[in-house]
Image 1 (cartoon, rainbow, N blue to C red):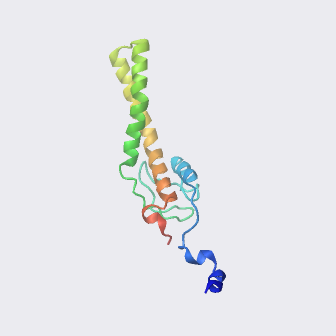
Image 2 (tube, rainbow, N blue to C red):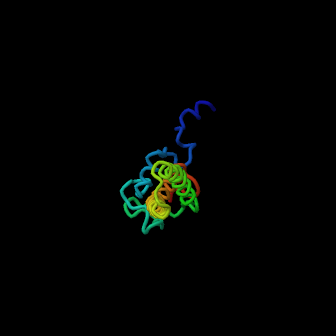
Length: 139
């Protein structure tokens, strides 16, 4: 029996989709709002709407489950960046409260609008690389 087992290639016992997916590369491609597989096709068809499939490599992308993750991460990053910065600016220069509010309100909105689609892309890239949800199966 051991002779017969040696003749069977190892890949015969593995599932069809066994290639290793580079998580860092997929997340960086998602951060750039590109397909996590090919890196050239657009990931998003509008500000936050993910394409059903990549127009270049035809990879199915509708399996993603980013949900509220990008919003939570955006709030986390913006809050942890702006709160200490607000304190430092207030202590160092003591600007007029209305000026301080205006500058930091615009800064928070601008940073949030910049980060949100990029973090969504990174999360979709992470899910694709880790074969989470429907990304594990190929069609």
